Image 1 (tube, helix red, strand yellow):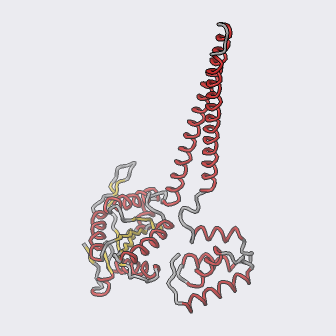
Image 2 (tube, rainbow, N blue to C red):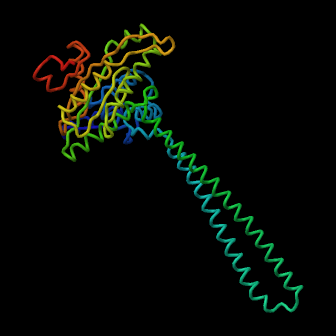
Image 3 (cartoon, helix red, strand yellow):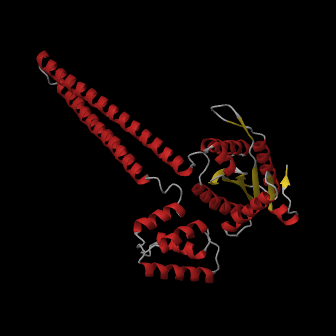
Amino acid sequence: MDYAHSRAEASAYAEAALSLMQERGVPANPNNFTLWYGYFSGDFPDLKQALDILLSSSEPISEEVSAQIFRKFCAHPLEAVPLHLIAEKMETEVATAVAALEQACRNAATYNQSLELATGQMAQIPNMSGLINLMTALLTQTRAMSHQSRDVERQLRQSWSEVTHLREQLEGARREAMTDALTGLANRKMFDFVLRESASEAMESHEPLSLLLLDIDHFKMFNDTYGHHVGDQVLKLLASVLRESLKGQDTAARYGGEEFAVLLPRTEIDDAVKVAEKIRQRVAGKVIIHRKSQEQLGRVNVSIGVAMFAFGEPLRRFVERADRGLYRAKRGGRNCVVSEISDEQNPVALSG
């Protein structure tokens, strides 16, 4: 979570948070304090709304409920992944492999001692019968060593296979935790995380960071007219256009419903407007076709608001400025781009 408060503000929010937690019997652990500090700061409207609903209930605020809210609004996107379970399984497999290797080393040492002992005995054997007995014993030990080596090899292969499977599980869980299931773009939680990281990096490197907020025009009417399946197709189409229009360091996310967000590191406002206009034109050039009937359903358009990060500002204000541009784009006729520059100099959007 992002904070940019004065010492007096932080002290007041902290005092209010602790007072409420004591009043409602909420344990004063770091996670709970983070929740209620964020509640009183007002920096996170979604969090505040969730906690207001919780406060309006007469039910006690349980640890389980608090943990769920923290995971939803405050945790790193990967913290929901059961990493400890996967790590425990990996640790078990590695331990098994190490034990197999250690046993193989002990077997090899024992076999080596047997060979050295046999070498010393050969010179003292008086007849062929004794030599045959010695060689038979060595052959038996050699066969046993061969079987043990194959067992170790099989165990190592099984462990390697299991570790590979666990690694794939971890990667899948990581992708699921970060990805919107419908569009394949980053989800809201991942966007919030990347926004914090990108803003921090921008301040450290003194390089620009721009944000686009996009909304599909008249999406509800389109969705109600043709059905949710076609609506989902439209959302996927916009996601595809975003992937085609962005470069490697950029992040596109489904911000919520039919609204999308794009983070553009190292991008000045003028260049961000150009990216937004390119996206707008590409979307406008697409024709929606019903997959089953192949009927042409028309075109969809997007409205886009653009803002550039001001070093040190609360991130909610950064998002609000882009959202204000989006609002003006909607009011200005839709299917257009409004940046904070056009917002200041010209109330009419940069339409194409």
